[in-house]
Image (cartoon, rainbow over all chains, first blue to last red; front, top):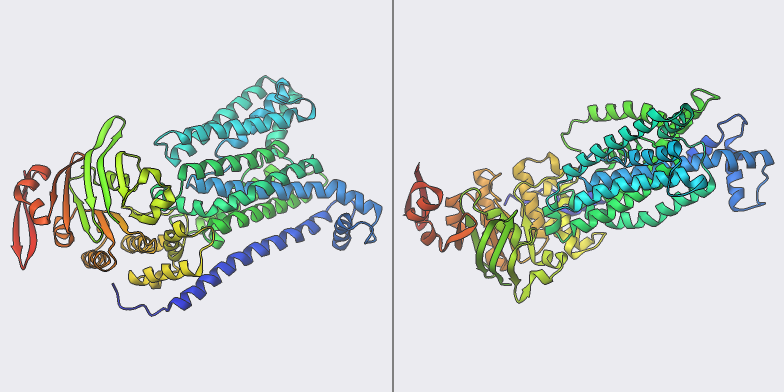
Length: 357
Length: 254
């Protein structure tokens, strides 16, 4: 149509491969940062430990009796600090990826576990357990089980809506926001009639905390992420096509409905498994995918892992501030992520010149 | 491969949007669907591609598309939507590579990238390859999507008003390119289009639709008569032939 281009195919290909190389580099850099922050974060606390001591202690867990480690260091790192840090990183990873998946499915940058009501659903489930003592599981799993079911109920409602003929992605998001209000109101109602002690516990739960992390919980979340992530990654390219519109994706051979269903179920499962242990930690699921796309573009094959790692990193950094800012009091992590996330987010969206995401 | 559409019907909340549509498309044929707003042109295009699920049969060669997977249909048919959008940042090359999806898997091969680059060059937009798709003008975006359809290497191309975002020069060069594809590669093209003069000039056949039905079909000169246009569009026109080309001059609305 036009005179032959001055740019040769080979140079475009080279630039394109460089672009992919940069995306991979970003993912590697994030991974290294996370490993570094585990070490730094583990030194923080009443008992002073050096970064070297911390790493040796961790390595000693995997290769027992190889390194000289003090008993105190081993106990502090393995039973107090590491569970908290690992829970933080895993929760960040899970929320980061769930946010990326949900924004992709709904083709909307406002989607996140929080805005879709999934976190509020979990909060309501927990409130029912705390205030009324009613639940699906007994004993120590009462609150966790309820929160998990609450999160799932919310996602099932959204999924049922989405399978209805002619439902747009905007409808799904609005339905999620409506559910969020419904669950929040119900939780507030329970708190209104609850005694002070229970009401306080609900508030505490809603804010989100990493302080009660146990290794069993961490293993449970890790398992869910390890199982779901390959499937999410496998479907990530199909989600790229859905970003170009449902009609286009269908015409390119994608079963849009099934893809959306599978991805939504997996993202909800990840979210539910995290919020049931940590309470509602806001903002990571919204912010991590955004920052990722600003840095490496919108290709979900790279956005999924990068947003996951960035979420983990952000949450871990927020946790360091939560521990150190008001020492010896540990501030709730959910508050910290919002205080740090909101200014950062506002800065990013105001600086942005583009009219799209 | 031949496309045969038989008794196509599509209802939306029990309101028929398409009624008893029969159509045959031979390889190397360029067919335009014309008709006023709301006649069902876009709906028909979407039904042919099974983006919408109509009643009746659509066959590619001997095979009914109802029995084919989406991916299989995508190897035979490509679709160029009216206002192609993307909510997230994506490069032009990545957008064109989407056309290779029916032929590849998760990772695009060297061959896929070469084919995408070739179709970019064919559309004269190689310079934009690594630019963000959303930063291009509407006309440039349209050409990217057509490049994607070319990269898809299907033998049937469906276009929904491909010229509506283009200036006159790009309208003509697009139509010439489509004509070339049809003549040299045996690709067949169906497109919905508003511009009667352009459709008359480049199409082998025209299909005139009104309220979900085909009311006239055949060679441009037979369809674009003063009586047909007056009846379907409600406008008075004058048809002239000059240098072997058909010219439609709109006179007034009735």
